[in-house]
Amino acid sequence: MKVMVTGGAGFVGSHTVVELIAAGHYVQVVENFCNSERWIVERIERITGVPLALDELDIRDRDALRASMERFRPDAVIHFAALKSVSESTQLPASYYDVNVGGTATLLDVMQEFDCNRIVFSSSATVYGQPEACPVAESAAVGPATPYGRTKLVGEWLIRDCVAAPGASLGAAILRYFNPVGAHPSGLIGELPRGVPNNLAPYITQTAAGQRDYIRVFGDDYATPDGTGVRDYVHVVDLAKAHVAALDALASSDQRELTLNLGTGRGYSVLELIETFSSVVGRPIPYERQGRRAGDIGECWADPSRANAVLGWRAEKTLLEICEDAWRWQQASALPHD
Ligand code: UFG
Image (cartoon, rainbow, N blue to C red; front, side):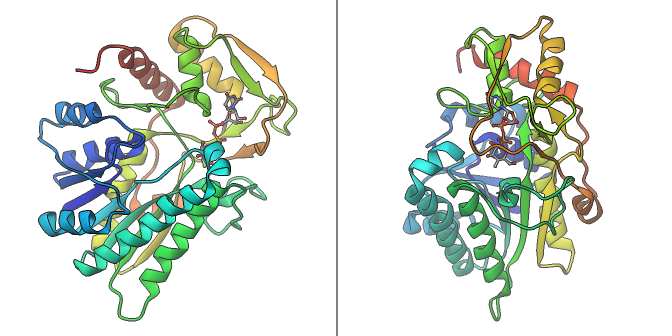
């Protein structure tokens, strides 16, 4: 299949491109590199041994997107291109809606023009906001607590409305990721946070590498076994494989709209993650307990049984593999980039 991947040099995007190529698909990456690096494209080529078609453009640029689709004529689009910082979204809500919702609307319009009728959408468990109970199933109430989360939910609505439009032939898989972590086992691609990481896993690896003094553990009075926040950490390579499976499912089933949780079905606490990283690094990683971070929830982990039933997918990599791969990437990413 010919697959256009928007945001194909980003964290989940780059790993998905690798898995798509491994599965025999033809890929065209569409990127504006606003939060990714050009050398990631070369790294993908090194892993796959295949030259990568790349169009540098912003998905809001309708004419550029049209020209790209005209050239490549994709059978499907996997849509990652988006802004993704929860904290930044509270400061720049209009930009987040512009890129995440406006960009998705432009993409859907142009897809229709070129009879491209399959989309896999990068959504997030953040659409659930504060879940009433764990594990969280797709039927749980949605209610995102941040502008970022709301742009993802509006993106979902937009896509479902396009699927349901009279005469439409669009099929969509909406994938709600829990906490994406880890890196490619080659150590060649991984997450590239800009500035001080907001997320726990890159903060831990940067602390282990000596770039930060200590980890701040936000809150130890949650109703969880050790009092720290519990999340469903899912390896990015497992996530990437789910996108390939979602494409296959859209191509082979009559179902035109799939909304699926992507998580492991198991939660780990902040302290468990720090401990596992420490065992991989071979020394304790310093941390300090602090008050709760505003807006955080105590626990959030997935019921991934629908993805298992519909895609035949389940997350296979362990927490230890997540930490090993993230640590290998942390060490390698400090080296010169080609
Ligand atoms: N945490 C710390 N110290 C840190 C960073 C985080 O203790 O320096 C804790 C948090 O309090 C939380 C856990 O680690 O308990 C995970 O926090 P992250 O910031 O890594 O992830 P979140 O669950 O807050 O959010 C992530 C993504 C969002 C996404 C959401 C989906 O950042 O984009 O998962 O559930 F929407």
